[in-house]
Length: 205
Image (cartoon, rainbow, N blue to C red; front, side):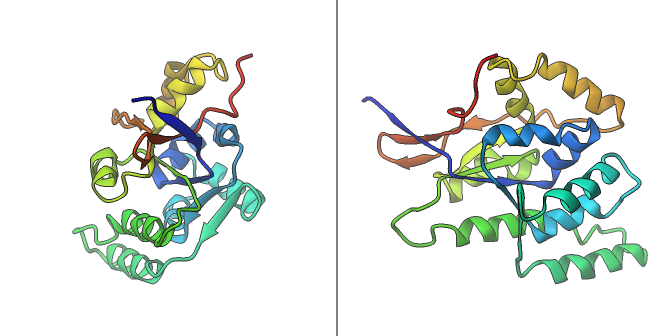
């Protein structure tokens, strides 16, 4: 059966890719989607929690400059819960109560998008978080294109947008952060015989 492809219309970015790209000062690569990206308020707060750690200053400048332009921050019901969890951690709670709240905020956003037909947005989720990766999203939102940081960079290399994905991953490591080995480049299943794709805007140099 021949399959048709439909372009992604909306990009949601998780905390991991933002920190990794900020670590090597390459947040500009998100422009390759040719779409305004969305992050949840919890993801933004996670990115800015440690301004003196890897990528912190770059992320602070990026959000300050592009919030509402390139990046749109979505309010969710989870920010106050995350803030309470952070206060517990700062008070000495070693159970990491803030862990997973960012994922929950993204899951809430995915549920909110296209909650009822007809489907209006074709979503891509850029994530570096294996527990919230391909399997989990496939089970609940098979229509979402699942892309990991590692595969995002590899595709950009294949289209000659960047010279070497391995070099950027090495630059990230040199800055003090390790890109997850989690790898996913799975189109969303929009309908029988119809999948999503995101590479139309890319041009080979």
